[in-house]
Image 1: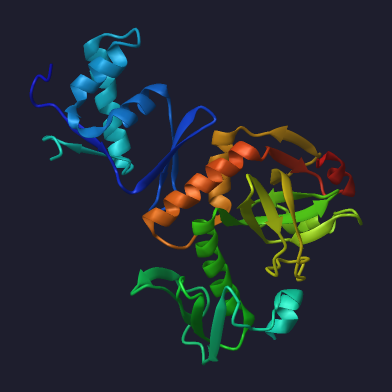
Image 2 (image 1 turned 90 degrees about the vertical axis):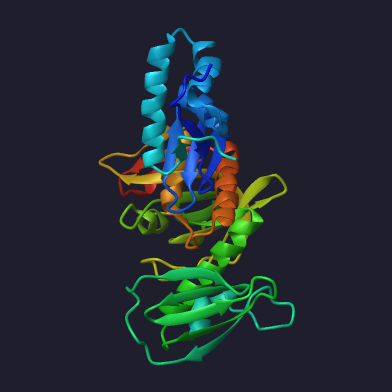
Length: 98
Length: 238
């Protein structure tokens, strides 16, 4: 399903994550900044293993479970992971983690 | 000086003391406003600020401080050491006043100026003050207890050396009238983390602390207490 030129996302080792009150809470262990992820973001966060292409994650976790088309879901997911990467929560790579 | 400041908390040193710090007095090289650095080097926590350098071995509990002859340096060192001990042991230090009433502790959290000392001054006679500045919170037997601390704010007096199970946490906000409103756990997490004392940039300790804070918020009801500086505000405190 990977169409090439995809992204691979992995969780940063500098964060702590816990479910709290039904929300995924992510804390930077560097400066204690706290982020709350919505349902979609939580799904992507949990699937960020560094080995699965982002497009596969979107198809499997988002398109299969929510009423959204593939391209819209992928575009939104890419925007989300780039934002999370800016905060140091996720890492984005062009190659899978080995 | 330390006995006067710490009152009943100043124990006689013994071989069984969990923390034992030797203090060497020096002339201050700089003021206490210099940046604090806390790092783990060679099995010891190293603490440096303009007015002190300190070392503490978390295994033996032994350490040493070189500081000027005034209380703020040792106060800072004690807060750092206890924050490290608590992070590993299921607790935390919180910028908050706390008091025991009817067998339950209540915490009033907020930054400087939020009203910690004010609410402490308004406490009814049957409330026992644990602190008006830094609360000591520990998870014990599936619940959380607040302990008295010698860390005083504007009130200038140490808390009582007692502990009680925590009944509620209130985030303070000065207002024209007093009212209380519940705060859900995710919103409470964002606020409480601003008030938790944590000095070490250590991922494992930060992870442990975050787990403790989340567990605390799952067990302890949290409210926002908007309050007018009148004794009746205590009628809203459960």
